[in-house]
Image (cartoon, rainbow, N blue to C red; front, side, top):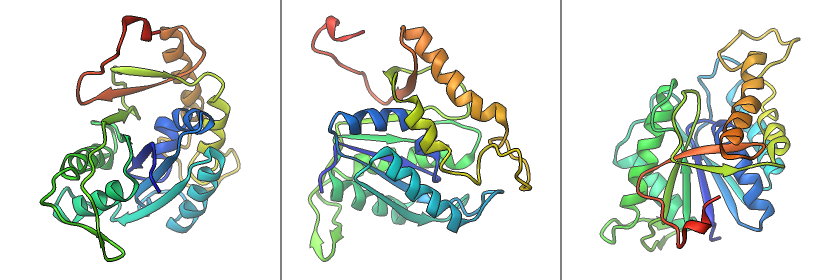
Length: 238
């Protein structure tokens, strides 16, 4: 299956938090979108790998993505090496996306920056004809996405481009809150974490509102880019 967009996250819930609104909007616009989680989030303080699996499945249904899979890299300990690069290259060549969305280039959680560099490097290597990979015994063709965009996560990073997600914030929040073990629950007896507070849950909305305010819309998500963004005309810009 060829996808228009393939979104990578170091952990289940990264994609929903970083670009869930964009995904919901593009799916509504008829684009085929997939999600690949690098790890099962097994080192997370709250919940388990099994509950995260179920939550990720439910979130994928809410967003309406075409596929979601987990590469089961070691949470906290995966590295940027040949083995991990090849695993991602196989996914890129399998789904042949035009656009890749991936983790923030720098963030509070060490896996976010690592995942960002890992996926970005694999996007380049995936286009090299002398790197041979197979899928179900069939040699894959080289494929390099046209664009790699990095969504913004915990840290405040100035975006290079923004996506108007007005009308899709509720769908994004539904997908985020499908991770019931991870976010605010006044009755939970699980340990507190930086993302389990009500302030954090509220911040998802007020950050999107503030970014929307800056570009004259209700809600927006921001991205950083690896190369210049080009348009055919100045009038293509909002």
